[in-house]
Length: 591
View 1 (cartoon, rainbow, N blue to C red):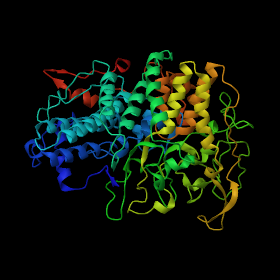
View 2 (tube, rainbow, N blue to C red):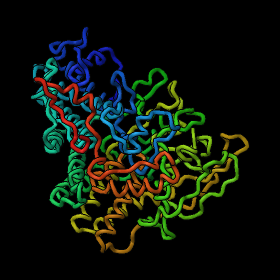
View 3 (tube, one colour):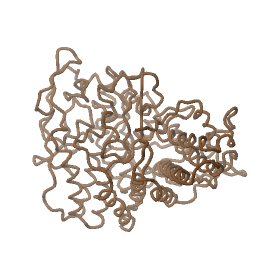
View 4 (cartoon, rainbow, N blue to C red):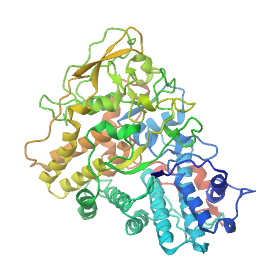
């Protein structure tokens, strides 16, 4: 099976970076590269399409690092949520510290670089469509597929922008002109969700149900992203009231994927976070990564900061899970989440303790997904060694926990020269997402028992003991351990909801908690709070408590109606001037 790699190393495709001249932040046309005439043929169009795919991970722009624009949104969806702290130490990447404290400034370079990444992707997708119009040696059937893939990508990039910013421009191929730097100076004066939906719907109606090349979207992927677009429009974000007509449309799409698509849940939860089980039966669309001893160009560069500070990684300690998140995995004695009381007390941690100091582990019941999501004291960390304080760069600053989902398992470690690069794909669209979005819709549509059934599908998989992290005993040397066969690392107690759901408010809370437990540390949490219209109350409650643990958050607060979105980057506005005035305007919340 062929695979589309996100970084294209050949000289030919590197030459295709001519499309970057259209992106707002560049002022001069690159010299010595392929002309549009050279590329107006089947080979050229296919190369341009690969170039558009190469932007899907948000990495590869000159003058910025991968984590600024990375598609897994660990900064924008994780650090800016109740899932995680920035991590590392106080002086590292201060741009993230400002975002974490909701000091949103249009001059923040992280925001600028995310904007650059998504609109570079938009430009490349439009360049594919325009060049295809001039190519005479592309068959009608292949042309239709190229258009569908390019429109999928264009919708994908615009969706990333719309999640981040309240007001963004939509740029299509009829507007975009590669050699006219003015053509992308489009006003951000209208709602672009209808345009995003149109791209995904067009892709859905043309793409095949399966693809020979791993990494290309299918009909099902386009349908899932179309449903996701509707889920983002499913609530009035100022009131939190559901838009049931939009959610009913999402339900139709999601039901079809669940009932008729070729997908099923994996046997165990952690199979969605292992190199060895990429592109599995649960996968609908993955961001593809690869690595070899010869090249690391296609590896998952965007997460390289988010590794433990100890060997074998040695850097960099960012994106540390919050105490609030760890507490969310506590369960009752009968194995259900503590929807209202989970944060009343803390799961004990090893703050201030050396890795070999005595420590009394938490003995209460826990959801087993915790230890596939968070590295914590005395628990085996993805098969490498037992987690301890030496994993952490500065415990006093950012706490005792480590992220884990993105880390490659030991058998796929050390292939390239950088120990923090691997081929662990980012599973951006999976069946568990479809199931829990469908549960959300069913709650708002009054179908509480169907919602309970859907949530129980997820909890049944999580309860499979084959997926429990095993207990490990520390050896004499720091990296030595012995697994205790048949014994789990903690008191894992998880069960299904067996009593009928009759209260819509409780059902809503249960579904939303399940989404947090299932997708924590994957860059989705802030955007979930945003679309549900509950970001302000959730984040202010979080900040009020967490500021007692992380003193740097003591003055942080979330302003409703402001901080649900980020300000338009100042540089984007400054570079949008056309006929003496900027075509982009700042979000009024930040004026």
